[in-house]
Image (cartoon, rainbow, N blue to C red; front, side, top):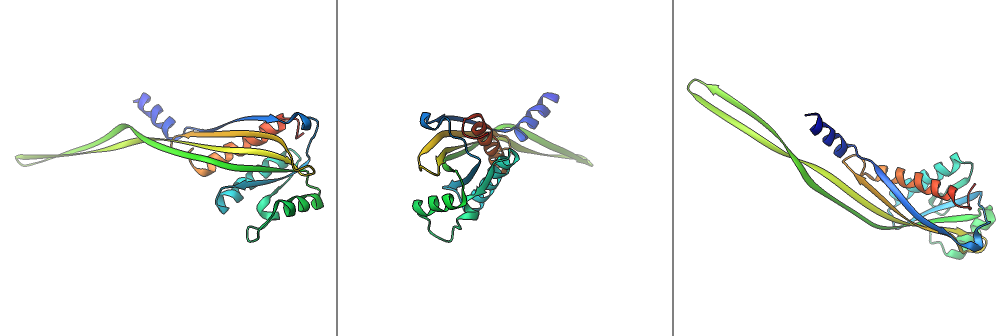
Length: 196
């Protein structure tokens, strides 16, 4: 019974994890940024706003000024690259972090059945009833391209790919994935030479 309970807990409450592989451009190895804007593209407005906000919160915990792209550049207007970089320059914002969503895949499978039964006896007759409920395990994987652009030169200073995976029922949600992704993005970028 303990074994089944442990399996059920793992399936229900697994964790979302993010792995990022990234590279700095050697020409920018000595360039550090104390301010940035986070732009989450290829996502719906709600998901983009939440992800940008979570990443900026993590950056601000480290003392880096961070702004959500959607708060500076309203989605009700069209923005050209020239307008965006001119605005960043006017505001003294040194970098732009672009997140581009790749694939998002999910699956589920039955790993066990939970059976319930009952029997009734009345007079000389007996009846029984049983119900079997499948227990499912869930899996989700999401990919994201991360690019740090130097605002002054408009060139890529750092590029990376993130893969977030989750198992269970709780940790395949958008919130769990965004929390894992935002934490790992900030951790990796503070390990790079670009943020201190």
